Each structure stands twice: as structure tokens, then as C-alpha cells.
Length: 478
Ligand code: GDP
Image (cartoon, rainbow, N blue to C red; front, side, top):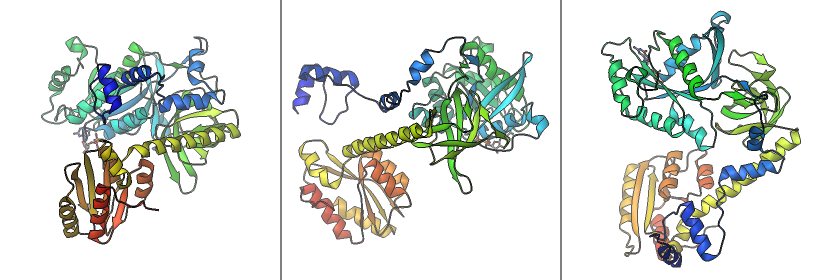
């Protein structure tokens, strides 16, 4: 409560449970005689790399015009479900001038490059092969900036839909220019003019209406105007973006997809953003490391090196990185391993810190006393619906006094799932399982997120625990 008072004197009205922004924290620190520094995970990783003599920002800043060479744009396709993102990616893949002769792109590796004759030269464009803004957002959440241009697909027979708006919001928030593909113009009832009209509301004004956004009417299934769409991407990229990178250094980039292959072990598709990646390089991607044993392109051909904006599937990592993890080439195997291990340790520390913030039955009473919680959120899972209902009724009937509000935010029949844990993370809830166990890998997730999960096969034991926790008498579990 005293912090709240100090804040009040600083002109900030806050409650004890409220989160504060960085400026307020700094002001609060100054008032109390401390200098408060907020270290983001990105900054932390930056410092970690600096300990190995790697300062990626300084490296980029030191590059001169002589070092930089043109690179292809990297494109993500976004839009509402069923508006044709997947079909459009297929159509673009087929439109590649080079693969047209060689038999076509055969492998889905998570990204591919096509070439287009454009104003007298052959230009390459890289496409991220996972449609939708979820992948885009997941990568951004890890600090990866991958996409140069977004293609927003809108079906002409359906119009602007919720995910259309979500996608364009994401692209605009990331300052990524948008090309609109008005799809399904082959369909009866298609109204491409209406799409242009609708999108003006979102600051996407078509060139023909005096705006700056290129709209291309296409049909993904009929392969109509795909070349024009590629031209629009190149025009948009050339208009506002400086797409250059230094190919003459160790590679740096992002993992766009990764999985465990039965025969080949961990397999990751990485997108080189600068430098050149070569077979034999020691690399580290997130907390995975290894040596590039072999690289494949989207034609399933072995390649020896990969230049900026080129996606390649890499074999030789010792574990599977996450999509959006950045990767870099280190001086040697040992350095790569050490960076990975340090990151692993930092991740653990961060997840411990995160865990402390979540509520558990054990710390409930203290939290209530300190005024930190006034609601206990519960998620109930059970083997049969009768049991779930009975448990819910019984729990809600507990006399909790007026110190705290007991709420069941979700209930269901079946094992505890990842979704339940995610919900518990967001709403700071405790999960009660009755005659069920967590689904595979769910316990791991709960541990990582610090979610308290408890399992019972007798209803009154569950009641006892919750009641005891509310009264501050729960014995710690060992
Ligand atoms: P996504 O969910 O955005 O990836 O959409 P899909 O690419 O899976 O397409 C959804 C449906 O729309 C599929 O049945 C496609 O065959 C259909 N579709 C996609 N593009 C076109 C098009 O240009 N014309 C027509 N008539 N149908 C299309």
C-alpha cells in the first residue's frame, strides 16, 4: 500500500495489483532513490551475444554501401480463412519462370523463392509458405523481422472479414507495406470494386482511387494475374524499401520452420537475412546448435551456400529450434554450443521469474492478505460431466467470506489440455482435474508457465484443499 501512496504523490492513481508502464517505474524508482532499469529479453540476449564478441546491431551499422548488395523481398500471405491464401501460394509456386522448365517446386520446406522477369531483369521473390498472420505474429513476438511485403488476400465474393482486418492491423503495426490480392474474381457475384471501397476505411486506398496501395484482381485457382501480382510486390518493394544486405560475412537470419525428422534428426528451414550460410558452418538457432551437415532448397536439391533472402532446409542441428528463433553462424562449434547453453540457462531463469507471478493454492492466502488477489479463478476438468458439475457446485458452495471471489472460468470433460493451461496462464487460474490426467506434454507446459494443476479422485479432497487454501491452512506439497 505504501508504494501506492508514493505513486499517488507522483500524480499516478494506481491499485496494488495494477501493472505500471516503464516511465512510471522509472519515476517511482527515482522517488525512492533507486535507478530502475528494465531489461527486455531482447536486450538480455544482446548482452549475452556481446559476451561472445557478437554485436549484430553494430555489425549492421558498420556496413557501408560497398558492402551491400540487392536482395530479394520476403513476402507473407495473409487474410481471412478460406479466402484462398493456400491456393494463392500454390499458384505463385507454379508461376516460377525457372521451375516451369525444371519440373517445379517439389518440397514444402516452409519458404520458397520464385523468379519473375521484371522490367528486363530476372528478379527473385521469397515467400513464407505458412499462410496467415499467426506465424507472422509468432515470429514478431520473438523479435524477428522477416516480412518485407505482405499480400493481403480478400475473396471478392465474400469481402472484408474479421481476420482480414486483424491481418492488416498486424502488417500496419509492423510497418510492413501491403499489396492487396482481390481473389476469386472468376466467381459469380465477385465484386472487386466493393473490396477497394471497404478497404479505404483501413487506410488502404487503391492507386486508381488516388491512394498508394496496389490492388490486383486475381484468381488463385485459375492462375489469373499471378504475374501481375508478383510485379506489384516488386513495385511496392522498390518504392519504399531498401532491400540490401551484406553477403560477405557469416550468416545471420531466422528459423521459419523446424521439426524432428525420423531419419535425419532435427531439420530446420532457415531464412538467411544477411551474410552467406555454407555447409560446414557452426550455427546456433535459439537454443539449438550444431554444424550444417547438408542444405536443401525447395527443389530438394543439395546446395552448398545460401545468400540473403534465401530459405534453405538445414540438417545438422542437435535439437529443434522454434519458428521465429534467430540463428547465426559462430566462429566454431564450441562457441555455438556455449551460446546455446547460455540461452538455455537464461530461458530457465526467465520462466522461473514468470512462474513466481502466477497464483498457486499455496501462496493464495498470502496473496489475499496482501490484497494482491480478490478472485480465485478455477478451471475444472473431469472424466464425466456429472462429476464436473458436482465438483463445480461443491466448490462454489464453499464459504469464502468476503475476502475473495471464487469463479469457475472454464469446465469440461476430458484430459487437461494445452488450451486449458494457456487459459490458466492468461486468467491466472488454478486447474483442478477429477479422475483425469494431463494430456501429453501438458504438464511440461504447466511447469514452464507456473500454472498450478491439481488432480483428485475424491471430490471432498479437492474441496478440502481449496477451502484450506482460502483459509491459509494448506500444507505445502512435496
Ligand atoms: P485459405 O484458408 O485462405 O488458405 O484458403 P484456401 O486456399 O484453402 O481456399 C479456400 C477455398 O476457396 C478452397 O476451396 C479453394 O478451392 C477456393 N478458392 C481459392 N481461390 C479461389 C479462386 O481464385 N477461385 C475460386 N473459384 N475458388 C477459389
